[in-house]
Length: 301
Image (cartoon, rainbow, N blue to C red; front, side, top):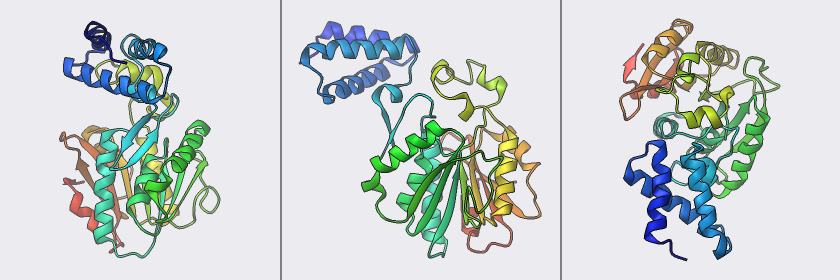
């Protein structure tokens, strides 16, 4: 069944209501149409389903990933997405791949224990397990909805992840984690994409899109320096040798650096491909094995 030219452009016009460029609207419409066709819908309902999805996207600002049901992550992961769980972003994918490559080529360990705090959809846990051999990854999140989705994503991506190591997901509040119970007593690496959007930024149309505020979980978005302080506290308790966290920019990096012990940690930051300070990297000063991560520093704090 082919969409007529007039219907096609009417659908595009509905998508333009969310301030997409015309070429972006065409691309999104093609993705939506492909998704509906692949869903094996009755031919008589295909156009109505496309129209409905374009309405939800254009008029209701629903994120495309929730409409399509998934988001590609890395080279081969397909992360299932649903309202109530944060959608994986390209920024997170970018730094995760860089960290994995550096570990793979430069960290001389036969096995690695990793905790992914605030795991959400499980995308970080999955990509680290995919890229690193003999790793044990524990994904933890306060949201039971997120943990259930992460477990689904583990099954969904079983072939891509392979049998490099083990992954487990469990519900837990990072401010109440107990080494030996809710996470391993000893860790090598902690990774996290914690809530880091300030209240002011969250309520600003300039900083946070309506689609994000309307559909994605506030719990996974709004937070600040207290999360980084606790992550490094957990690193101390578990004798972690390195910590890698996503961050919201230079100002937040400066605040975070005030609460982390310079005596115990070498701190640096990495920018994303848009030159935004996006990732903080902590390396324990006594660790020789993990100093290779300092190769990724765009600036040392």
